[in-house]
Length: 97
Image (cartoon, rainbow, N blue to C red; front, top):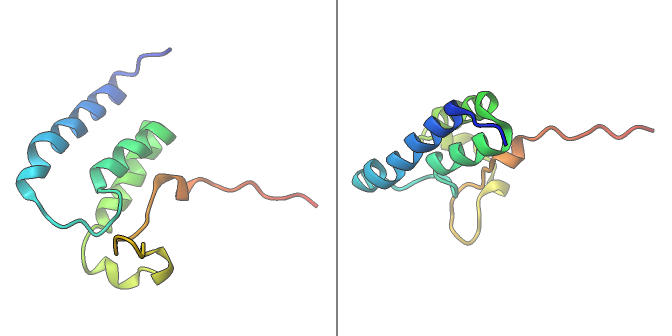
C-alpha cells in the first residue's frame, strides 16, 4: 500500500471540518451527501486531483441559486434533497457494435 501524504492531509482536514466547524454552522444542506462527505468519497474514489476538481464543482453548486436548475428526477422523494454522488461522475464505457 502506497502512502500519499496529500491524501492523508486532505482526509484529516475534512475530518476536522466535519467534527468541529460543520456542527457550528448547522446550515440545512441542499444535497443528500453533504459537500464535505461528497469530497471525502470523491477523493477516495477518484484520487486527489479529480476528487478536488469534483469537490470544487460541487461546492460551487452548493447554493439556492444553483438549485433552480436541478432536474426533479434527481430529488429524493424520501428526504427532499438532491441526489448527487461522486459515482454519478464516472465515465461510462462506450458499447461497441
